[in-house]
Picture 1: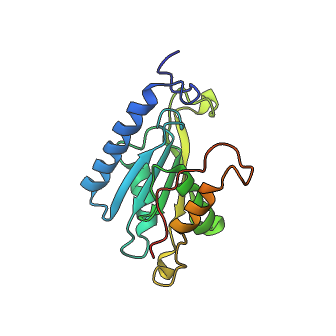
Picture 2: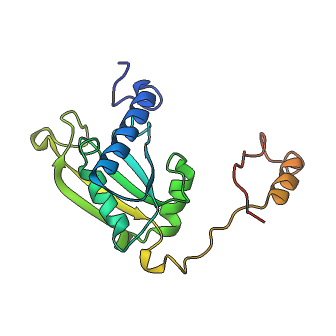
Length: 191
């Protein structure tokens, strides 16, 4: 079936459109609610056509800001239906770049402190992960992958590759016996 939410990405071609529309609606909802510091919102198309995973990038301004943003995102009108995973990242992380999001999850999230659940939330009547008798109730996971606010002024500096090192390695990529071309790097250490 084309446009099926359960299609493997990228088979559900509606996902590309849904991702853009849903991300914009959530961003608009958070702005209307008055949630400050939101820099970007992205609903990943591989997550059931942008329905199940939302990443919110924010500039933290006060204690609890990331936690508040997660809760508001989980229950805003555009995200409450079928969203299962909500991830908050700092504003130096591009929410559309899943590699950066995974990096933030790996370096800024302490699972025992930074993961919460919401139970008995709205789900999707065709959600294959929920028993028919339990629908439409589901749950949501809220993941804070931001630098802990209490350490915001003393957090380790994010390291990046120097352009000169990248260019040197990229020039010798084949000589090192590495397949294909060197990966494209968009941002480098600011010297």
